[in-house]
Length: 70
Image 1: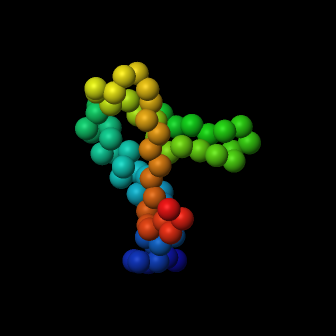
Image 2: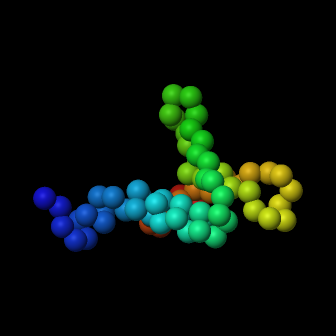
């Protein structure tokens, strides 16, 4: 059985992506789209279109922690 902080550490990526998805849907009131390459080697968490940005989808990558590979 997993408890407390260990639970968050196990699932922090999925929980963070779900939180961002809920915020985007609530704010934009639109569908979200997901992209994964053939073979599943690459993915983009969300593809969104924002008002005022001409017709292009903006890829959003969600990270649960600090990414040292900047």
